[in-house]
Amino acid sequence: MNNTAKKGCAIGCFGLIALIIIILIIAASIDSNNSGDKKGASKKALDTSLPIVERLEYAVLGTLGENNNMSKSRAISVINNSNNVTISFMSDESSGSYSSLESDIVDVLESIKDIENLNTITISAQAMFVDKYGNTFTDNGLTINIDKSEIDKINFEKFNYDQLKLIVNSYSLHPAYKK
Image (cartoon, rainbow, N blue to C red):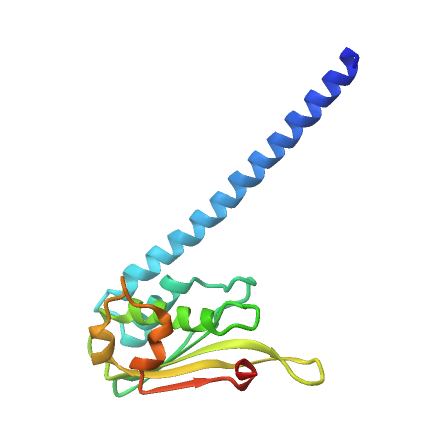
C-alpha cells in the first residue's frame, strides 16, 4: 500500500470517528435537556401551593416526560372530582405487550405517592391500536382504579409491576392485548 492510500484511509477513519463523537454529544445534550424538564416538573409536583390537578400533571410529566418513545405527546389529562382523580396519558408504544403499560402506571403511582388529600385514583394508559381495516386509533390500553391508602403501602423499590392487578380495585385491559 502506498503513502497516498494510507493517508486517505487515515483521513476517512478520523472523519468517521469525529462524526460519531459529534452525534454522541448532540444526543447527550438532548437527553440532558429532557431530564432537566423532568426534574423541574417533579419539584413542582411537591409544591403544595399549586392546585392538586397541576401537581398531579407535573408528577406524571416528571416521571414519564412530555413525549413517549415515538416522540408523540403524552397528552396528560387530570380530572379531580372531590379528591377522586382520573389521570390519563399516552403510553410508550410497545410490540403488542401490555407490560410497558403496567410499568408506566406503577411509575405514575410512585410519582403521586407523596401527594396528600387523594381518595381514589383511576389511571388510564392510552395506546395506539389498528382496527381490522388497518386504521390506527387511540384507546385505553390499561385502566386501573386504586385507593390512595393502597399506594401508601407499596415499597416501590421492591414492587414488581406484575403484581399491579393484585392490589387495585379494578384492572381493565384492552381486548387487543388478550388475543
